[in-house]
Amino acid sequence: MLVRFKLNGEDIEAEAEDDERALDFLRRLGMKSVKEGCGEGECGACTIIVNNKNVASCLMLAPELNGTEVWTVEGLSSNGNLDPIQKAFVEVGAIQCGFCTPGMVMSAKALLNRNPHPTEDEIKKGMEGNLCRCTGYFKIIDAIKKAAGEG
Ligand code: FES
Ligand code: FES
Image (tube, helix red, strand yellow):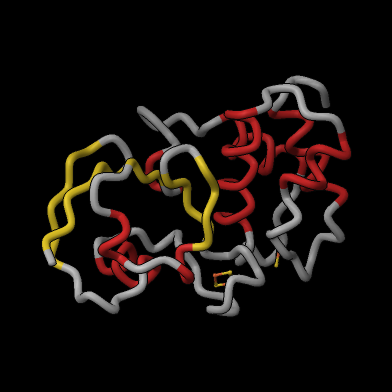
């Protein structure tokens, strides 16, 4: 079907198979930040923001994106300037292999959009769908605090 939606602020129309995952559809449209880890909704590597909510794109079908507003990491920086969350991840050193990072950044963005000053517990809860095998999570939490102006 023809999927019409807003992707990173731009109106997009693109054909998708009825059974195509949103993950594959977005990667086909060039959004290579959207990573496949588990493919089963467990790791968060494929997280995108759909209508202000962080969702696992491996569990969504491309046709379900019709009429939605979608954000991926590709849409975060503007005029060469990183989003405050991206900047905080770099400055704090919350990135090791980097595979989980785009999903982490999108979940953090969704969290700060709905709660600009989260407590540490709220950060942990907001990020519980995102797994990282490298960092031990402490620096990721520090980066989110910093992006919230509290680190
Ligand atoms: S690839 Fe989607 S949650 Fe792991
Ligand atoms: S930085 Fe390697 S999985 Fe998170």
